[in-house]
Amino acid sequence: MARPKATERSAPEKMQEAFWTLLERKPYAQITISDITRESGLNRSAFYYHYANIPELADDAIAAIYEEPGVTGFIAHIIRQDGDISMLRDYALEFVGSPEHLASIRHLSLIAGPHGSTGLAAQLKTYVGGVWLSVLGLDESRLNPGQRVVLEFATSGILGVLGKARTLFTPESVAWLADSALPDTIAQLINSLKDDHRN
Image (cartoon, rainbow, N blue to C red; front, side, top):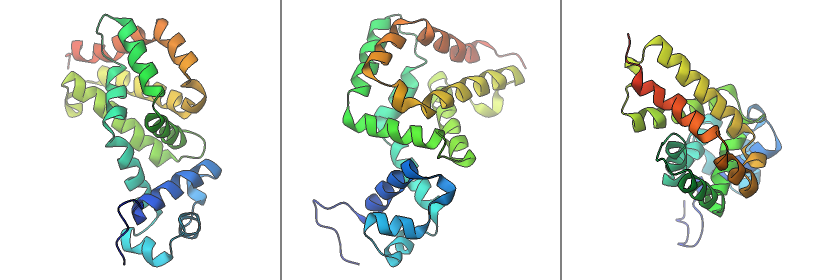
């Protein structure tokens, strides 16, 4: 297989972009290898050279989002209690103002939205919970039942918001949300995990 030119996207990048385009059009369960090759302009051999199946491609496409430091930073920033709400608003507005971050938000929205799948949504929920636990310095295996309920409640809520992120994460709504009580409420809820060490 010929190497792509420096300015050309690699075959996996083309297939990942095809995956996201198709996920906008149809449910995850209906995406086929033929759909991916047709949308990406590549052949089946190229697909099988890089991936065994659609779930492997999906994992790779989703992992690319998680590797973006801005996405992890945004999810971590949600629960920080810096005391300066204007700093959170400025950070959020800058985040949604970046085309690269908007593309990632769009992708997260597709995972959590109606075209995603239960498995993809669960993977995203685990990722969000893992980011929050990492920020708090907590080990999930050591959480007590009450902490698990709080984490499940909070990650499920964020998953619901992410499923509608394309319409909710506009500069106007982010500015309004940042000035509301919601950021403090979410931060207090998640930060309560570190304060509850009862077994």
